[in-house]
Length: 578
Image (cartoon, rainbow, N blue to C red; front, side, top):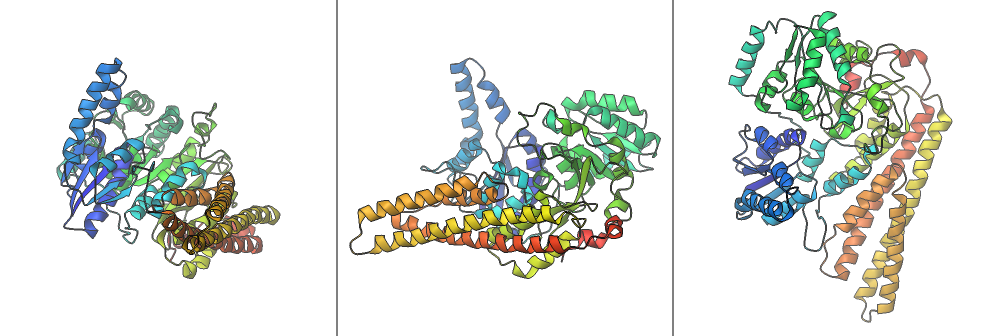
């Protein structure tokens, strides 16, 4: 079998792609795997032994040509694009997998003409099409990121049907580079104490903790806690790294702009902890097995965070997190919410904190931030839970309801056996809610919306059956068929109207995308497929409604115990779910 994987996004996406790629190779050991990626992606995939060949799409160069004088620039861009993809489109591909959720990659996936295609692609009569339910969820999640439920690695694993594979192999670290990195650090006197990695960069200013905070953190780690610090970054981070080094002194090794991706992987594997913004470097650190403290401001760690267990996410306690529109934000107040002393506390006491032997937050900082830790749920997927007990909030409740319901829908497997136990264990990670009226309203409003959606879907399902009966009758009435079509369209518009509501909007978007991706030969085939889709969606909504009622009941009956709230979480309660 010949497989082409398309990943033309950023560094972090390429690093995460290697995890899925390794699982594909484990499942299909005889497969020949090729990768189409960017220059930065090539530096990741070329070092992986599972990859037979890497093709480079010079995306940035092609885009830059379009800003030249019109005719000349477009001709040059088209020439380079043709040169980059000519060999790919001429080959036979058994399976094309596109993990880049952008229209150019969808067009590339279509042009390859693969026998089977997974992920984002286009068809002659569709903007995008994929029959995988995980793909529908992925597109819906772009619109409703406030209620992100799954890590992108798990989403991609779901798209290619490899959720049963829970082993996470990370980036391959070249042994010679690792030895060279050790020697380099030893020559600078690094290696005898705790070594901490610092990466102050990110793809946008709205994702970056202020450099003065990184500098102060580094000073505290070096002078107060006797740590060695390695500062990483690309060419755009050199000035930030110099500022950090000037603040903290000789115990800081400035590697910004001096490492390849392979070098970065080697150096990061020698760190005990890496502190970074949401960036590609964060995924490199996690992929080589190093503990990560990720600082999140606009993006959602549930979705874009590391895909390993026991990683830590720190984020602001703000109603607008995660950011709905980074361009619309005028003050970026989230960037000032995470205190330096809190991050230093997490670095120095990392092991004790994740084992529940030390409080996660410095006294007085809980009002400003939240701290979560990653673990595997009973279904083998990465989820994030509070590192320290805090009051349960609306997003927590909705995620608690939506996650198991969608897992059942997306995987097609029953979840009844583990659902109640899962909810009970998850609720123990939050402080019992003293405002039962507020919690009752949150759950009640959500269940009411689910009930409305359920009734609408029942109506859609009935209309699809009437459609089939009329079409199969000996004397099909064109007027009756037209009337049924108008009634069904009205019901479907009602689903779209519900999309504006929190939580339930994600479910409506999933249903809408699944409906848009139906492929049918004729109107009878479409009515049959639509009926099947609406019955499946009904199961999803009914499951979510039952879970909502269970969560509401448990939230209201949880005992209030101040001593219980002050107790640290145990290692078992955090990381064992089965």
